[in-house]
View 1 (cartoon, rainbow, N blue to C red):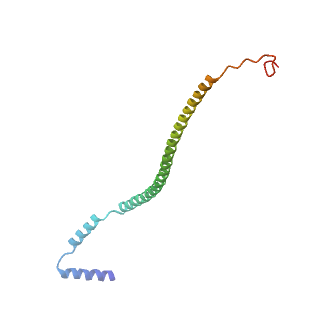
View 2 (view 1 turned 90 degrees about the horizontal axis):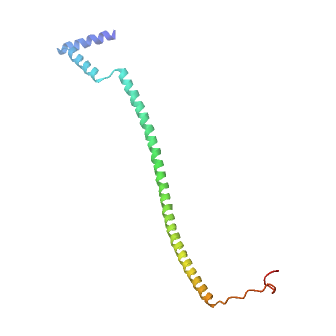
View 3 (view 1 turned 120 degrees about the vertical axis):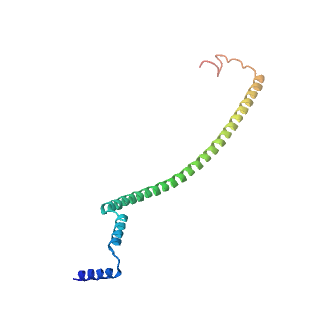
Length: 139
């Protein structure tokens, strides 16, 4: 009953305005239908966007993890580079010491040769021990 009364009042109100509302209402309905999508298409889009959002969150999580690993790797690379630089420095010092020791060894060998030559000039051949002499040949 209320519906009938409401429709009647609406009809009277529209009739009182003098304009036919049906073409305007049809145009409004057509505009609304054009601007809306079907339920199936709507929910398919919602599902697609939901999957895309989930995938995006997953990728962002992976990216954050990779950035964290990248930072740790960069710190480790810096430590390794520092250790390598120290090793290069130590090796250079070792090469210097090795060269210095080789030079000293050459000098010492030259000094020993010079002493041997000097001693060789002073040496007198020793007589051969006799076989029957004590501390000599056969025992």
